[in-house]
Length: 267
Length: 106
Image (cartoon, rainbow over all chains, first blue to last red; front, side, top):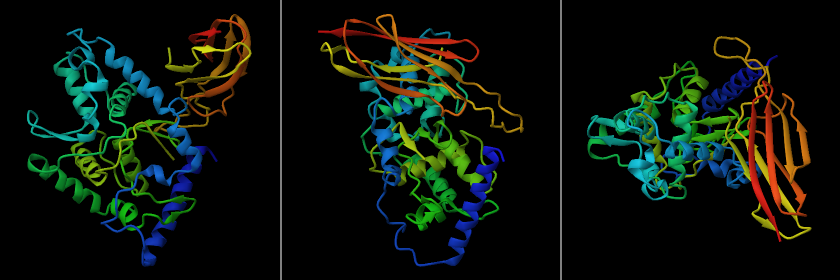
């Protein structure tokens, strides 16, 4: 059997086991709604933690390095670069990743960092938008988020962002897909339980974009949402859709206080 | 040209053993994967990695499809004289990626 086929089989087996687990309705010790946020880092093996901590060997640093080049590179009709307006990312982008997604008064909705980068490209650089999940957009997002490494996640969910936040929360608790599972079923109720060889994490997003070993490449929060939705056999939303931006806002709020780890390495 | 990262100490004492690290951004497609339409994704790999120190070859690696993406190499060299440490990756279609650093031996 080919590897993707094997992977699909493995996922099916994992999910059947999970269903059994949830139907059994045991009394869970860990994983209540009030549990303190815990980074995915703490669920990793010693080897994977070492890989993330190594500033050179962490494969995500390839994207960070590429993002730094793109930051300086003049492009578009305006012949400007990110740096022309923002200067040194080390200073100007230091806290940016901690507060995105955020409400945009001009657009009248909550947008995430990827969408802000594309807005800058269109309005300031007079350049076309980068495709969601393209190598360049991931590189720029990773580079900007990397500037906030170590700072606590701190998104605003009041005022104009409140409606978006409420939709994100509803998404998190909504059962979906053929397996009829909500995000909360695994990542809140059964945190710390075993799903075959793996421990179920809280599903925190403080390290995104992440280098995921399964994908052998970098991925955004939205790619992860698509993956999770497909895993419960639900129809995923498009990358960059408002549903996922709302969910991302809720997820960032869940991760409040956790240090930004971009580029994190995950299983 | 794919993105590459290298790490060579700026200076070393003569006779000292120093760690060299090199990594390149590459999917290393093994030919066993399918896209969303069920079509086989053809093999796409780096086939050769060579490191030279002051013109002399010190490491040569032949890569095979079984390697994971973004191949990373770490090895030691004994610093004897000041010179360039050059890195060269060759793709299966002949695309060459190079990177270089200067090592000062005191």
